[in-house]
Image (cartoon, rainbow, N blue to C red; front, side, top):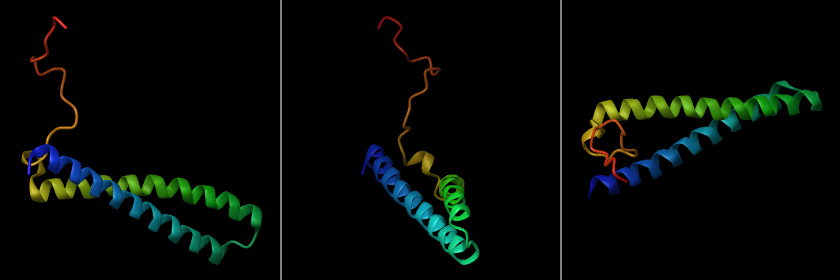
Length: 95
């Protein structure tokens, strides 16, 4: 498989893992809200807080996982860069 194919597959799997982590965090927060919050107004506020924390937490865990996987399997050699650097000196200035 080519580097671009590896990159696309890695990004698809990583995105799915990120979504699963976000769902798990949200469900865990919703269960905690259901267990400890009795007031409906407070539950709605806590639901918004849990939603934001689930997004931020999944992003944080996702970054830790990607860094660990990249370090363990040395993915820099196996994946194509997503964006090309403009500072590499290979840009054609006549365009």
